[in-house]
Length: 395
Image: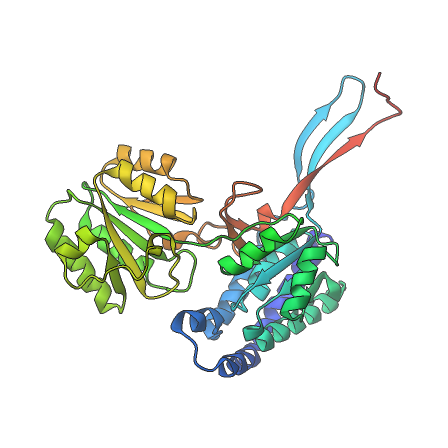
């Protein structure tokens, strides 16, 4: 596909979404009503309101205005025998995106894969079926109006068993799978397929408050980390250096501020002795859990070395941040913490393709191959070697 045709389809899609905003929201209400009683975090992921619809449109516009990664010259070499050797970026081919709850993925993940030149299979959760089917209808209308094949974006309206067979036996010759969901989905995909997988891993993000921190800054960053509960860049754990000035008073301030936001605060034995409002752990796995809910866990550390070891042991390798006024400590922390995104004096909530400047993201990868962190347009290509000769043979 030429870049112009891709952008024409995306522009048409943005226009159709804007025109049919009310119908998208109406279809989403059907999904919410059919779910019955659901918790706040699931509702946050499932619900599509005017703000989310306009977010889809904004993501499309960002991708339209981004450089097309397909066909870029990555390397060039002229062999002494006359061979012309080039390495170019090419699409993966057919990408399967499996996702739960969030119907905006139907737009925001697919547009990046589409502009990178890939064909897309979408398998959303049954809880968002009406919304997803309507959004794919708009996808097909946009493709048709742009003179492109509708099967460039296909929705798989499959049940659980059919989806599992597709993953196990690669019935559609898929080139790449991107699972976006909980540990159960990701573990099933990675253990039941030989298709390459980009893992959009779990969060369980950490913040370390150093003994040289501005505590007011730390408090604000913690609260921002819990400003949305159902996203993978939300904050789950706070590690406090046990030598910070005014430890008791500052801990009380933090717990009071979190409670005012409706956040349940759990803590280690040492932390609980300092504030009776802090709850004991619900189980012995809380340090490794991604909460996706109104919970946070606070634990102490003797120094930054202990904090780093704790993060590398328990985190989901997604995001971690240090709050400190000591730049050397921050540099050491960011180099030694094994996460896709590391921060100094900033919220983990910024780990997002849009915030990092490349529009829609398809996943946030916690792997080290093929790419790490937010995966967007530029990362949805692989490479191929193109060699031009005039009859050369290797002696």
